[in-house]
Length: 145
Image 1 (cartoon, one colour):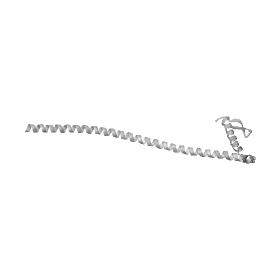
Image 2 (cartoon, one colour):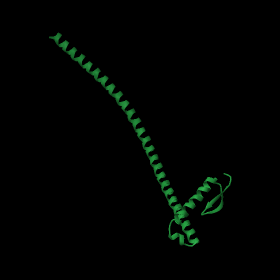
Image 3 (cartoon, helix red, strand yellow):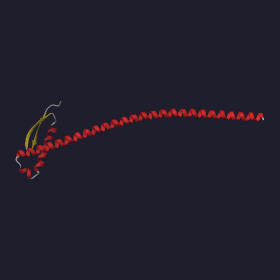
Image 4 (cartoon, helix red, strand yellow):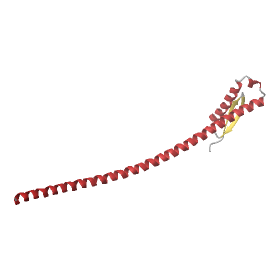
């Protein structure tokens, strides 16, 4: 765990000492965010006339709104990520299944090619035997005539 750090920050013109386990840059960033929200409301004419406690509540509500919108977006992105991971898993599964089918088909093709070669050799032998047989018959018919 990191060491606890402290940083003096200015929020709405007042100096505060913030402390936490984050670095001073982060603490300054948080203070800057709050100052930006306050400045956002200060730019509205009606806001300037509100009592101080109402101003603080409006800033707090606005910050809470930002938080819940960001949290909702993170949750949506996490759901999207889970769906993408499941899709990738399914695609990998399909890829492996297709690789197995391809390997099986290639092995079957090799077997069929070997059988085809064997059949062609048998065909050639049978044709040669038939040709020899026809030639023998032809020559015996000539000599018997």
